[in-house]
Length: 186
Image 1: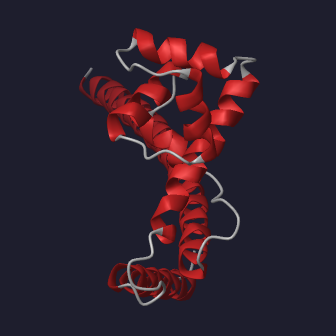
Image 2: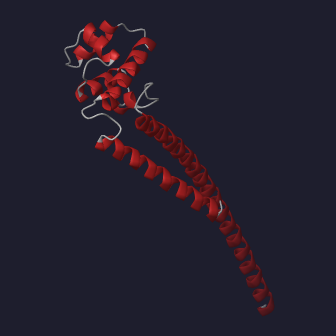
């Protein structure tokens, strides 16, 4: 890859990082929401609830089935509690989110990944889009690193083969020289 494209990509990544930081600053200082508005943050509960509902339905579990599994993990929940969580109508504790992920045999953060819910404030929507682009870039870089590592291993094998051949040629040359010397002395 040329230095120009690497430089262009680095510049593009810097610009993306700066844009994401600006959006985070806007959300943090409240400039994208009315004073005291919780909506930009509550969508996480709705997103979480939607994911829980999808995972539960994919397993053909009822809300009561999920509540029972959570009770096994020490969380006294009922079907109505699960329904409220799925609707995003009930605040969620971090420990509960981790337990729910465990029940589904998923890493705790996995329930927060994926597409954001519809109608989130525009800076947050842009952050999700930027995060998706960053994740795609990360996957691409991982593939590039794996391909580069494979090329490195292949090149290293070539070097070892060349070293072996060089050693064999040198050994043969030494044998011929030794034979010439013996014939010249004998």
